[in-house]
Each structure stands twice: as C-alpha cells, then as structure tokens.
Length: 142
Image (tube, rainbow, N blue to C red; front, side, top):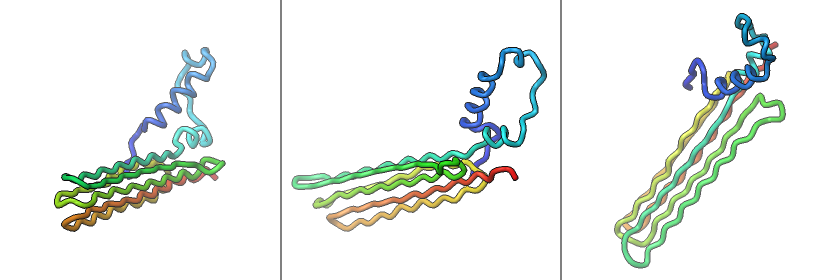
C-alpha cells in the first residue's frame, strides 16, 4: 500500500472545504481540523482498471476480449470495494497471443487487495483471464 502525504482525493477535499469557508477566514491563521474533519479529508478511495488484448494471425481465426469493473461504497462510506474482470481468447491459428492487465489503487486505514492473471497457450489456442478485488476500510474515530 502506498501512502502519500496528500493524495489527489485528499487535496481535492481540502480545496473544496477551503472554498466553502467564509472569505473572512482566508486572512486568519491556519485552522486546526477536528478529528471528524480530518476523517472526512482522509477518506478512503478505490480505483480498478482492467485491460484485455487478443491476436490471431491467418484465415479463419477468432478473437474475443471482455473487461468489466465495478466500484461501490457502503452507505456510510467507510468501506469501498472494487472488482475487475478481464478475459481474452484467440483461436485457430499457429500464431495466437492473449493478455490481461490489471491495475488498482486503494487508500484507507485497512486495505486488502488481490489481483490474479492466468495465461494458457497451446499451438492453436491462447486464453488469458484476470480478476482483481480491492477492499478499503476507513475506521471512524472513536
């Protein structure tokens, strides 16, 4: 897990909250954020990207690729979940090649991520599939 001092999400949240404050506060000293405000700024985030490619050279060949991604949060926004699936198939040629690529980004107090890609190739057939699961959990202050 990579943690930066100011992620793009935190930077955007800070800018938005700064613009929402009255103009009078712009000339004052920096404000100390409460625990609840810090938790809102440092909320978790999940992003999942899947890519698939398939090639087959020659006559009477077939290729197929499919990708899908889903990212959703719980109603309280304390848990973000990302799922990604990719499949590539190339058939019926002595020159086939398939590939599935996965990329994910997650930010939170606890992050669980798993990304698996399997490739199978025979003289006439290539198959690749990939699955990515990411869960980011923010622990609310007590």
